[in-house]
Each structure stands twice: as C-alpha cells, then as structure tokens.
Image 1: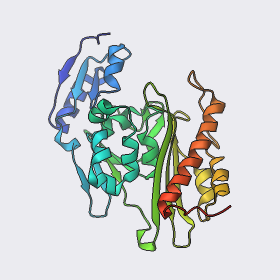
Image 2: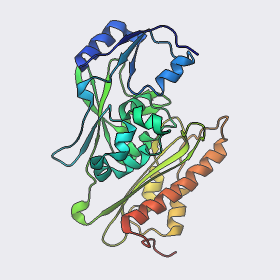
Image 3: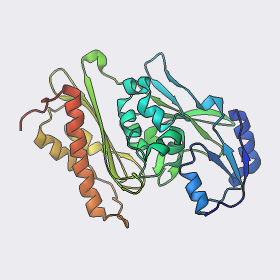
Image 4: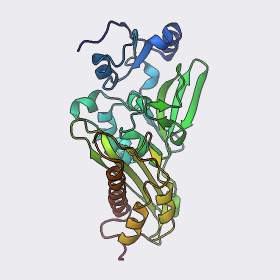
Length: 302
C-alpha cells in the first residue's frame, strides 16, 4: 500500500527538531532508520502529517569511551555499526552480539539503536541487553537533557519514559565493574525468533562475572518477548549470585525465569510454551555466559 500524504523535514540540529515538534505536535513523527515506522505507514496503521528525519542531526552521532570507562553510543548508531565497530565490540560485546541477530542485512545497515529503543517493541532485542548491562538512556527535550536508567525506561508494549517532545540522544553503558577484583565477565544473548521477521518470541541476555574462587560474583539476566516489556529476572540472579555454578544449579535458577511475570500468549504461541522457552533459553544463555567468563571447561561438576 501507499502511505497517506505527509510533509517532510530534515533538520540539522536538535533545536530545529524541538521547534518542529512544538509546531506540529501530535501530527509529527520522528524518523530514524524507518524500519518500524515506514511499514506501519504503508499499511496506514500510522498516518503522520509530518515526518521529521533525524539523519542529519549532528548531536545524535558518535561512538566514544568516556573518562570513567563508560561507552557512549549516539542514537543514530546503526545495528551494523554496533555489530562491527571495534570499540563497541571491546567494551560491550553483548550489545554487538545482539545487534548481529537483528532482522536481516538491510535492516542492520539502516536501522538505528535509538530508533529501536524509542519504538520499544516488546519483541525487540536491544532492551534485554541494555537491562543486563545496566545501561543508561540519554534523552533531550526543549527543557534540557536527562538520563534514564534502562530499568526505568521501558514500561510496556511501545510505551517508554520518553515525553512527547523528547528525543533519545544516546545510550551509555558503564564499564564492567569488578575488574580490579579479578572478576572475569562472560556475556551471551540467545533467542527463539519468529522466522518471518527475526523478532524474538523469547530472548535472553545474560551477563555473569566469575571471581577468583570460581563463584558467580555478579549475575544479570534480562528477557524480552515474554511479556509487554523487557525485564530483569531477579529471582534467577539471586539464586546464582555468590555460588559456584553447576549444571544442576543453573537449571534450578533458570526455572525462576518467569517468576512474578504475566507471560503473554498470542497467535504465535501459548503462554505456557513461551514460559517453557524462557526457562530453556535462560539456562542455555547462563551456561554459555559462564563458560565465556571462565573459559571452556569452567562448569563445575554436579
């Protein structure tokens, strides 16, 4: 189908973006990579009167490491850049791994980190990784900027903490803690995907730190696709933290992957099967993250 008629603006600064948003209000939509908005427009599920293309906004670009070791990614960083950039691969390997399984090559070359986050599809891959990395999301509006922890950003399907006149400007990923204490981190993202789109029926991001005694000094596990928004599986984390993982212990922890969660059932799969997938993929992601933290053969015997 053909989208309904719309006006098109291509600003070159955030100030110009804010002016256009104030001028057109609810009739305007922000365009980054366009891989979510444009299909919706073609189906006339979205009919904005005005498109504001962010592609030339200078403040939204750039990849840098800050003095405290945190990695900062501009909102216009593409999935392809997240996958291939050497700085990102070194400082946030989990995020690079996630970006590499988003959609197909065309989507990865044009889709953007900030656009995906702002869209907040519950089956998207980034949110779980951002939660597991304890990332922060920088946003800006006409009144100035603010920083939102990832755990406070995603509220529900396509619902975020963004105000109507705000724009995601960057993602900030803190340096992994514990390096000075001899911790070794391992990361893994796994998902069961919908083959037609590669969106996750269930996705699991795991980050595990191994201390010098062979115990799990820190555990972060987050899931997407299970319910209306990505979430931290705190029961899994609490069951493992401070203990020496065995295959049996990891399986026990994974059984807690959907504790306290209202698991979604839909036309693609039942709630019961989605919960089963969440437990299976949580166990697999934990096992592989733990192996990466300590090397092959690091799994303790049952």
